[in-house]
Length: 156
Image (cartoon, rainbow, N blue to C red):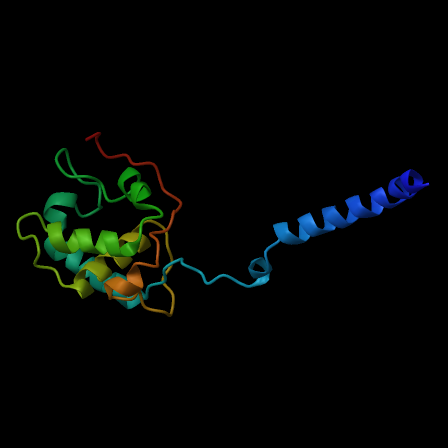
């Protein structure tokens, strides 16, 4: 008799175990919206970056961002390699290493404006919210995976 009872109750136990498994596999926090980490920048920031680029960057990277045989293009492969990287790393690199003839002379605002310009030139659209300038705030933002156009500059 106990054996019959066991086989009658076994499907209920299995069903209960499966329900518990499914419930534990779906974390409660999954239903909450996740804050976007796609950076936004203003048209003013991008224009400021464009003006600075013309003064400080065209000598090496070219007016059309295509680079030359010694410097990389700022479109295509190089920009794709920064996708998913915290913006703080990119702006930090620009501040420390650029321009080549005067590294370390750009302010955090300058580096941020240049990043806004690079994003705009590679297909991102300006928004109403400015790209933050502080390293701490930029650390949580990632350089976007933009719709990269083929890099037609000479191979480096």
